[in-house]
Image 1 (tube, rainbow, N blue to C red):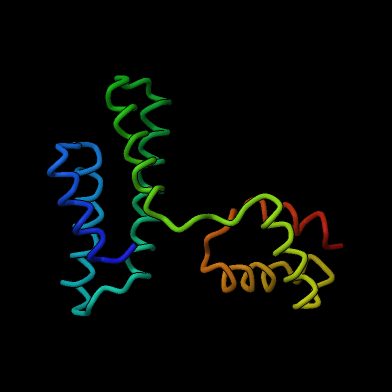
Image 2: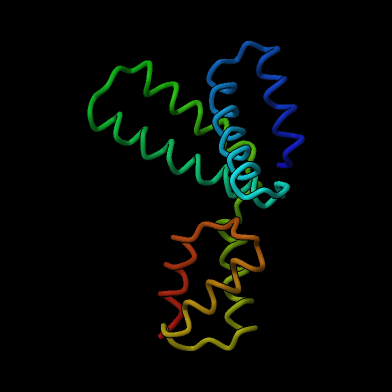
Length: 147
């Protein structure tokens, strides 16, 4: 998602009177504005993606806390909708059979043989996918394949 796409999504949410979507998109926009102001630089698409991931993580943590505390169902539902909204703006995650094939190709490419090489392989996977892969599943696959 680009910065301009984010602004358009906020406008669309305002027109549709979609409060959960508008609220969470404004939160992301505010965080991105902080980057512009504090670091005095233009925001890149990578900044927007990183901020989306960060806000998703924060919102999921809040959601987990809300569920554990047994807070009102309305708040829990809103947080769940917000996480779904943010995830819809992220690039598609590589997972399943596609991830397994990528792990095998990366193992061959890097020549990794032991678990000591796991960090190098994970780094290569991150570079190949732009960080858009299921890291837990990749680590599990690597653990099974490396001696």
